[in-house]
Length: 199
Length: 193
Length: 204
Image 1: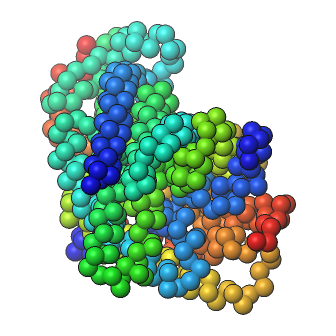
Image 2: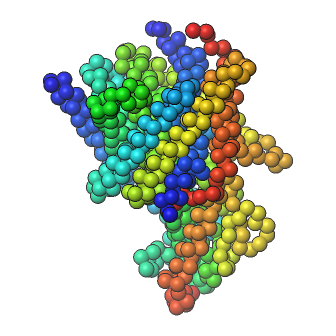
């Protein structure tokens, strides 16, 4: 896997973190009832993942095995705190809309998973490409989820009413059950389009 | 009375997994078998209660007095990672039989967002130390209820004819959706405050 | 043993570097966050009485529309018409929401019962559910409502003058808003804006 394009598209689709690897589900389920929230979270995760991948690939072998996870978590937590401060300073309404879930990016297993299995053993360039692909795949899932849920739950997209006033909002779509059901159905669609290989 | 209502609320009406979507990665991967679901549930409850009992004083006595609230994510993650490490060593040393059944679940817990989530919610909601611990205990039990029920349903599902692309994670999410509907029925029963 | 020491050294090193970076960024962003808070407060105060403003005349507009007074440790913004008669009172209200503290700005007519406008300053409610208290559709409902005997946020408000519709799926946050308005208002009326104080400020 040295081809830049292959590394990128694997994360985006065939090994999509949400639909294929079932990682980062807390965030995927929790903040996707509005497209604007899904998009912000996607960008935040993209930044944290690529930045921490880069740092971890530089650290490489110098981190002893037993403290690897704590060290990786520290790197991630640092970037997440940076994102939190940045949102607070420049995009207050978005920071308010995401609430405590910004902090939960730290325990997004997508990020730790990539650092553990890829960045710590590859060159900085490959790591950043891999991170960008996986983060884009994550963002894709967030946006797909939030488009379905906002459209059915509010009748709107990006807060703009599109389904007309005659539309009766499906309240359960914006509540917890809607998140699970939409994710289940999207996994079905994704795996129907490109089936999981027997292994 | 207040503690009992927080406990019940955290288990049912405000179930950390089915209302706040926390801790789902292990919920999907560890709910294939009932026995591993139990192990994971116990381990999460234990770590959750201990870490919030440590994180509360760390936040209120170490960070707040010096205006270092912005270090809360880092502080909490260090506490969680080291608690898990210490717990693993203690269990390995003194309860070897328990270690063989539960040990494998412990490292997974550092990245369980429910653990960090409970500590963050506890600070946000301005709980006292004792309420925070009760809330963490309740959330742990609530999480265990979710994973054990999910595993029981999935074990029964082995004999069902599920379309191939929907097998595994897909159908698990649909079950979770129906469970979440059921848990919505608890809302309004007791408050979290 | 050497390995253990190396482990600890690495951990401490990483923790120190990251705390240093965060400390630095915190120092640089804090004034910006502070400035945003002040601007947000002024914008919300102006929006709560429905005064139009541009980004560059915010400060002027704010100072020409309102007279700020600190009474009982609370900033109160008085508004007068051209003849110098008091037309409205604005102040901050706060209390605990469902997830965390909620702060808001409320504008009232001089009777201290009729709501002119409500704006949310800060909150920590659940994304997409309780967080919708910042939606215009929810906030606009309060305009013209009368807090007598108290405001009620209910499922089906109808046309009653002291009731507004709650947010679907966020009953607790809605009830929290109801409590914050009623509690702060009665507190402010009895302790800060008493009849005597209102008399003093009724003409400029």
